[in-house]
Image (cartoon, rainbow, N blue to C red):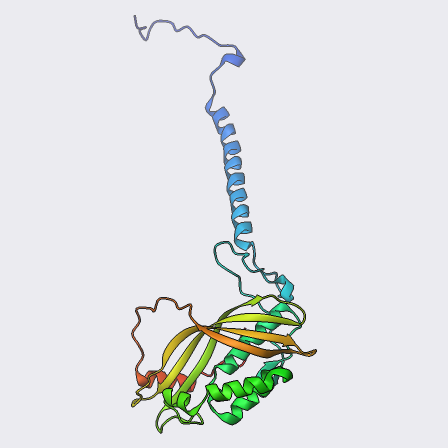
Length: 270
């Protein structure tokens, strides 16, 4: 039976440890939960930052030993490698490579650029290149072999004369671009280095019947340490591996000619 307003009320006081929680007690517990939440967020941020910075080079650079080792990036293939560019050249070709595995790979990449250049189609510049990059004991055999390889018949297939001159109004293009290197059987005296390359070959110009196209191939260079530098003793070439060509519109003859004239090739590769 409900009590009327004029009926007396009876109040019952519970012991202190049995009283229900008051709003003040709830307010006291909220700062603790907030503090715990903040600590969790800060911890997650620290972990995320440490993961993001993992593998980054230290500020200020470092020696070649600071570079990530091949295969260090999981699932990404061999990491880029190589010593800093050398500071000397001979006949426009880099020289003075370090007496190390990476030094040999750098030498092989640069020698690939020289071997695949348009200068190889001219007798005098070809002989200069061979004398610069070849081991003295192998230079004669290499020069004879390359003279046969760059015969007038070969030049004609590329659309140039016996000295690599393009027809009037056209520009001859022959460039080799190293994509990557790997060494096999390195010792302090010799090593074989494979250089995966992309090449551009052809005649640039409006009337060209041999438009500039690309080709993928691998050069295998045998190098010997001569006491002062890595030098070439032999080389071979195989096709590929070639990636799937992109769905990309080919440039016009005018655009290719402009690119060839405006973009110089690299003297130092890798």
